[in-house]
Image (cartoon, rainbow, N blue to C red):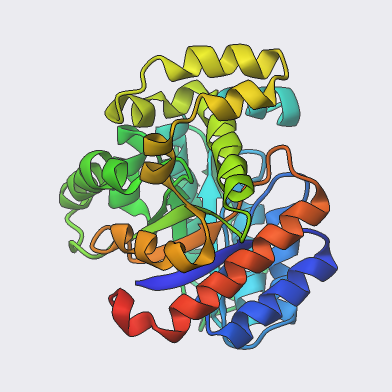
Length: 344
């Protein structure tokens, strides 16, 4: 099982953390798209390293033209020496419309087509006589000067998925699936893996063509109560989104979204944290003292090809986030040093 870590902060922070992760022996670093573009952060991480994998988890697909995404991804892959991984996500409808002024009615089929369109641009740049003519995208001039990079590989494309539709689409077209931090090992095993397998079979692809990269929520520190509260609050924030209700249902917590949403609207973070009980917390997150964390990582064995260590950020200061990432990085370094005990 490969160990990666989600990093962030200023661009200087990203460069520094990527370098530290490389020295620590982690397999990859991953950049999110919240207040900064994931692709520029990826460039900062690539420039500061020479061997570690660099991926986006995730870059938002629909606000960008597939052609722009294809060009940017290949530039980053060339810059990295074939270390870049393009992680794409659809984002929820409300955010797409309110923040990016983009309307998407059928995100699953559109994401399938988006991946196909990106690969069409790459194929054209290698000299293949191809165009893309689909329901959402029509690209009749996928390259400008003809074959300009005949030697370039297809950059790996990983897709974020939670529900059955996107999980099946991952199996059909993606080089990997990126799990959500709320997606527990139980949910990945019972709800995601079978749908990926259906997609692989439907597309006639090998069984290992779309491995799962899990995003494990990690909150560790000597102050156990504070570490666990931070993880509770992050889970609570994610769980206010209707798209993730199926995860809570599988864990027998159907009632939580309603109660959490009320507390969120009232800006009552204490109540939000209180609503996440110990059993649910430990089913989803690795939270507590450092000496107890390693055993918790074993629950992803046999489910995920890669575990990406992600830290809480909701309700935290910038300094608190930096400290949380540093703690997760130190934890990841210890795991990487003893990786033989974690499936290689």
